[in-house]
Length: 352
Ligand code: KG4
Ligand code: ZN
Image 1 (cartoon, protein in one colour):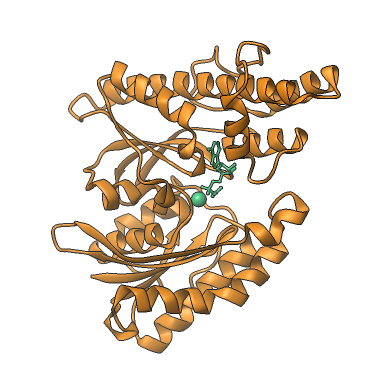
Image 2 (tube, protein in one colour):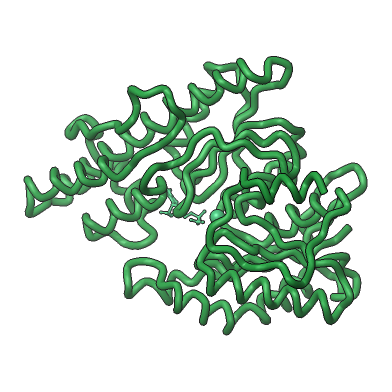
């Protein structure tokens, strides 16, 4: 089964062709991503209207390239998958509408994919992972622990009550006048900094829940920066290092608790932690998660970074997993700005 996947929910215009064989093994035949970083750079963040317009301008060529690079013709594609949410609604509409047009013109099934499900199932494409496993999704828009029991069978164990982790990196970068996206910039600065200089708070860490909160930490960083302004390069590096240590502490403590819960609730399953989302690229957080997984006797799976960040292959793959279960969606499927992974309609679709 070969699917075209289309992703336009944020600032990446992406399309890919993925194959899934009868044993459930996946292979990426093409994977084309066009980042809109340059368009949004002057504004210091993603501007939804600009994002939607850029998707309109580029999506047809990106799809064309994905098809050409796959070595297939459009007629050899068995289904069209597109992100139908959650995300910036203008962008989602561009991708979903394009997918509907293709599906209608080619007479192929449409799969309206939940973007988070794309992230959640990627490790099965890259590592052939079996269910169940624990997913830590940390991106610019999401920070959550999800128990992945099967396709369409998700249980959210924790989420952020304010900012997403990537968003926290981006906001700290912004207040320190570093570039966008902030994560890589903060990480670069942190390498040269003294992580012990500032003791930033670790919000919620004394509570047992698996939720995150990063906005108080961001405020603490701002106050510390204002107190010692004007900042020298040394100050900036030390703030970044101290911030990164605080978030690493938070994420690793939570991951250890989540793995303990996994062991307790699924005693027969091999404990496995999958990390997805752009923040998975962070070395300090990655090293911390490796340590936690080792201590818990768990397997840690981090797909290649280009597949952790937004891409079309994860959408095509999620579509293939659904189609393999006999599922597809009508041309009346709607685009959704909000669409939690463990919502009832995700479950209903699976049961249907
Ligand atoms: O998954 P992603 O590409 O896009 C979505 O948000 O869906 O994630 C982007 C986020 C940004 O907030 C970016 O600052 C963060 O991931 N990020 C990082 C690093 N690389 C990207 N955060 C920390 N350290 C990094 N090396
Ligand atoms: Zn994403």
